[in-house]
Amino acid sequence: MNKRKLEVSMMVGALLLLVIGLPTGLWMANGVNSWLSGTDTYAQVENTTAFYDGPILDDNVEHRYASVNGTVETEETPTWDVTLEWDSVTLGSTGTDNKVVFNWNVSVDDIINSKFTGLRLKLNCSKRLTVLVNAVKWDGVSLTSVEAYSNAHIDNESSTVHWNITPMGILAIKNDLNPDATDVVWFQIILEGYDTAKLTTGDTIQFQFATSESGNVYSFTNYQILSFSAVIFGIIFGLIGLASTKYWNPLGPEKKSRKRSGRKKSRARRS
Image (cartoon, rainbow, N blue to C red):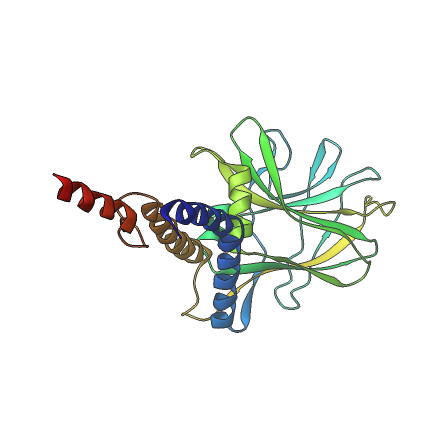
């Protein structure tokens, strides 16, 4: 293999590493971390500190949790049950097509720097529901949202859904949201009626929100997994780049052909 063929091979290898190797490496790192983590532990998300007092819609009206009918917001008062863990909210808003929004007081960076592996939502309602989790940012003027998780619908009565959090997935959300340093960032948990099963005044939703994370001290945070993968692949790309320069040739120094050296000897004899 000559130098030119080596350079082409390395270019192809670099592209394969970028397109296939990096996602695969992150998947493998996350798999190892899951193995180290063992059984996840769950922490209930409820009451005051777990929710953020901020805009629900694109306005300056702030709520921790509210039902929304179009552009009309109605502050709700959930019932927190720390004994049975089934919290509930009964819609006080008017209208025949409502949704309930919870401002979860966690930012994208909080998840990246944590060992969070998922968000579990247990729900119980007399109607089928659609579940959304959005990452949002507020710059003081407008609210921007990026979908983090969606469930087409869950059946009525008791159901459980999971938003499985991966390092690559949460990094993609951060890149899509692209917040400025002055933006306020958090997540919204949104529950609304599915299809014709609309939420109306007086409907009650029972819910349990809980985060899951590794209880093993030897497991890694999402940030550590991303950083480790970036360092390893940075070294590999650096070696590929160096091998494409004149300063390092993995094939060794190029040898001169015998034919050329033979011509030089014959010229020397004639002189």
